[in-house]
Image 1 (cartoon, one colour):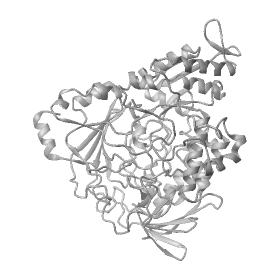
Image 2 (tube, rainbow, N blue to C red):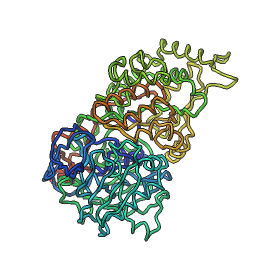
Image 3 (cartoon, rainbow, N blue to C red):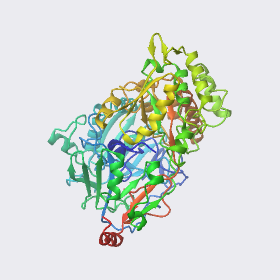
Image 4 (spheres, helix red, strand yellow):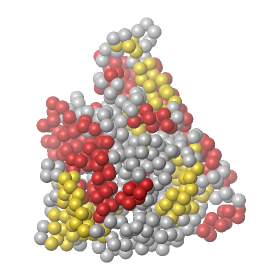
Length: 635
């Protein structure tokens, strides 16, 4: 199974360079979604390009006069409700603070200057911005705000709001983000009521910076000043935004409903045609995964992206499925795998030696887990860019080898001469004896000797490993792993905590091993510093492992400075190879399809775009089907 998503994870899943439907950027624009083809419709006046959008490399797929996104149904009806579930609870409507647990989709009311699409990698188009200008070296960018853009209270979106939002993110919110932003931007200047110029620092790579600042969430300056809001504090009152949805109803910690704003300023924009189709979106919270499934069976909510392989394999034989009320579907997921893994806290002294980490990784038996627990539906994750062309393969050669060789003194053992590190292959038995012997030899060599009681010790201390877990459904995955480690002489255990404790302990780095995901993109950039950079290792909410690798740091800078797609791809594969060799994760699993169950009242474009499911973005409600199911007593 995939680990059940927390509310904050739902709100921030798959970050993009800007707001994409209801999944807006919370941190940095790492990638947008699909192949970049050259289309010469942006005009250049001298050395300045004036355009309706921007691409990381090459041109844009869509011309300035496009009428709607190619994958949406422009005639999709508006109306109805879609409802989903979230795990745990929430206590704030501010998703930009490290305090509290943000409500699911708490970022839905907000927009940015630029937005991306679900079928184009590295491209951003104007949303709040009507147009943009930038020179060939991208040392600055000017955004021209749409005159019709409005916040939900009717106030216009202005240059003052953009500068206020930038300055707020520069001083408030996530420390690792503000540290990166401060290194990138030299100044933000108001050129007029609706025009803003961002100038970038001369010593920083500028390839992604127009999209970075274009992806900033835009707040209302007046709303913050009148209400005394602080981006670092929790609040149950949403800030005023300009997006298509507003918070409607809330039962704190239990449920939250958003309603479509009938006066949304951007309804008729070509970028928005066929999107934001539901009148309301409701999220029901459950503290237990099985309870959430029972709620779905009872019709308490209507859409479920199934994350439990056991439930998918054995649970969907209830009457609503048999009667055809609930539809099961497995569309292709063409996006990069989530990178879900067991993550070591490298700040713990027992994990300093990579041989210890390798030994612990050897004791996770994916093959047995997939067969006995997951009903064979998963594949193993090896790469941080799994399910994509960016995953490192084979022995490094050519341009990749040339990039790695100057870093030889910094590299983990075997990077230059071996295939990339992959998860251990195990036998069908829970404990693979071959891997047990190999793990034992590694721990022996690392000085962890077995005592008369079967426990391994070094300097009188046992080798303690605690798995921190807030999901009851994940117990069945972790507990066999704990048993395998105990057979190795490791003092392993699982600690169950509630969601609030999980959040607090993750943020204070008070854990040995947790399950986390690494949301990588096709065109990664400065956001990699937050996940893997030494500078942010003790401040970033994303660098859970606390990785400090000089080789990774050097490759991240190479990625940020890459001037062509080929250069970028080579550098990403090299970084993937190094990260895997650091062995700070034990990769888990993924599947290349969605496993969907939903009451048969929804429709979607066919085919779906390759890089987004889009159920909250471009699906729609079929009122006729809904009336029939209601009449039949489905919910």
